[in-house]
Image 1 (cartoon, rainbow, N blue to C red):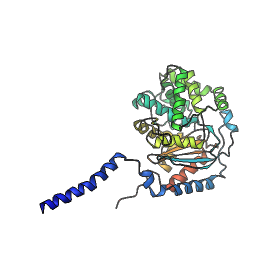
Image 2: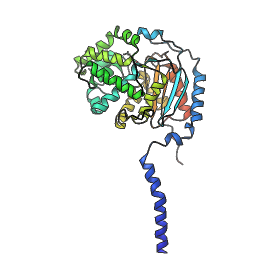
Image 3: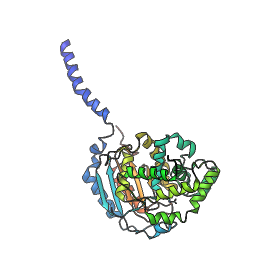
Image 4: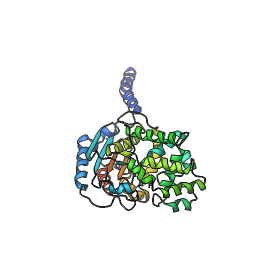
Length: 350
Ligand code: DON
């Protein structure tokens, strides 16, 4: 009797332990595969539906305070999803590129966290949303340069000034390489957009000087603004942006190239800033609707990150008054709902 018990225990251990051990080794990996709504067929079906539903939306208008952006084709409409296991789903215009604009703020922020740790952002920039427009000078003045947030212009220029590099060229090289690693391919500058913004950039220069006055600018303000302006002019298509978002969704490992771009620790501190201030003064409305970290740019792109599952990007240039692509908002909201990936959507255990 005793021996039979021991034998039963032994067989049980043999069966149970390898299984639990295997689960511990790859805690996040199986999600995409096991989630019933995230089958390849369903993801493509939902993308196709969203494209058909929103392709004729005519709301909003291109940014024109950067003159070159006013002449970008407002009908560009591209959607891409890249999963953490490296599958790519697309619909619409994947060849037209736009300037990344403020979406770049995410990747420069991640670079600074990677290089100097999360505390430097708390100490030298701040993480609370300003609740004001992305280029608000009042927001800087109210807090005397404190709490300027790395995802709006003042904090983003400060973040660019913090990136490692002995001089302006080295800092820029570092930032461009970071963006290329996130996208998994060499990216180039949209020169007309860069020249257009750099030639008409007094407001951002004023912000950088004001920060300098408050001891919150960490490199020459004119050069830091120029580096920031260059990063905003990096040219990307919807698939590039989705791969960049998917790299965040995958804890910093690019799911296409398999390169570790930043650590999962860095991603852990980057995503909450996106969640609270990625869509500027409309960040609350966005989070309320989707529950997801995201980031917009005045070039017309929006990325959103479903942690552990996928990155999604939409490009459509016409913007809302807050500076966010209207069609991209509608499209991503629809897809998030249809795929059931809002992380706050909880099925109660009875
Ligand atoms: O500094 C600027 O104003 C632009 N280069 C970027 C602003 C931006 O993309 C805000 N996005 N929604």
